[in-house]
Image 1 (cartoon, rainbow, N blue to C red):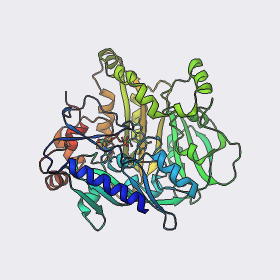
Image 2 (spheres, rainbow, N blue to C red):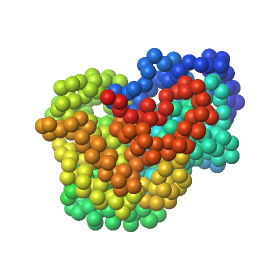
Image 3 (cartoon, helix red, strand yellow):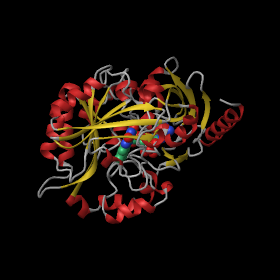
Image 4 (cartoon, rainbow, N blue to C red):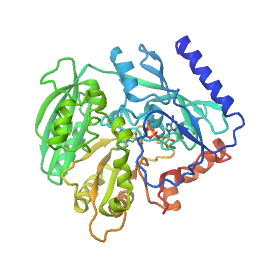
Length: 445
Ligand SMILES: Cc1cc2nc3c(=O)[nH]c(=O)nc-3n(C[C@H](O)[C@H](O)[C@H](O)COP(=O)(O)OP(=O)(O)OC[C@H]3O[C@@H](n4cnc5c(N)ncnc54)[C@H](O)[C@@H]3O)c2cc1C
């Protein structure tokens, strides 16, 4: 850390510890940026004391020689990118929404379409300062408090809050070349996706699929020379650009946050919105702005009438690669996506995370769906989500918990390593001042 930032960071911690000295109150985090969770009817007690961590939101120190960044936990990935790109460096993994924070991505399961190469966001973590519920701040790493270090991923702030993270960076060029090709057959598409994970020059691999026989694979490579340079702003709708055979270049920052201006595909492609796309200033076209000011849309999704008409299918599932075809086919057997695509990508993690026990060094298929679907007459609430969840678990898969899950405690503990979690909870939050992961993630009706 530079002297200035070190002093400021230490002062901030001291202040926090004064506020939380011998804390016995139940806690929840207060932050300025939006949340990228999508859960329904949280069971969390709303009267918890809000601990304000919003000032822990700055990069602290860049060691460009060793490609390491120290950064405060509430810093967004856009801030991180703005800080590192001028040095031709980037985090190993950069989630696609600008306002996801490093802390949120470390305790969630931060992922990108180069996860097949570098693992999840937490795989780039070298060390973190974690605020415990009793007000103590401890450092975790591979050598220090390793049990908590290994259990941060998928803990979602139920064991402590990340105040500082030391992460690995990698070299990056100023532009990204994208090449998209159409596939009419999932077998061929999966075989191509798998083959490309072995090709060194490929930086990211993803596919968007509209149906069983309309799949577009996009491969990217870094480059210094833009050819057919496009922007993700103005009239361009990124996912439409990769919904046909195409070759173009984006600035690297635009590439990282390519789904942000259209919030994947949730900003409609119609006359009015296309007009707005042309005239709206770039700084207003981001998921943070939509989430903050589009809350009525979220509330309406929660209304009784809306729940009867729609099911919000915003989920990420991962299954072992050889089961990917089954999950994909089943998805399109039961889901009508209304013209919206889904994303599929090969992913791999080099280590096992205690609370997200995917097998290390094995390829999985990640399938992400981010839209609301029409409910059929008589269909039970979350029927489709539950059916896909069941298949995913039966196939030996796992799903991310940024969105609601419907497992009972026994099933939940089996999948997310409840036995290990209970021990960690007793050790790091013995008074249960933070909610449990099960309370936070599951829907109680
Ligand atoms: C539509 C959609 C698209 C998404 N796309 C992506 C994607 O492209 N890539 C990706 O990686 N992820 C994606 N996510 C998931 C997202 O990364 C996780 O939900 C992540 O946890 C959000 O982090 P956040 O910074 O927004 O934190 P929040 O949403 O504010 O918080 C997430 C949880 O973490 C806790 N928390 C927040 N900050 C900290 C901290 N510093 N220390 C400890 N706990 C903390 C909170 O209490 C909360 O439980 C997506 C989610 C949605 C809904």
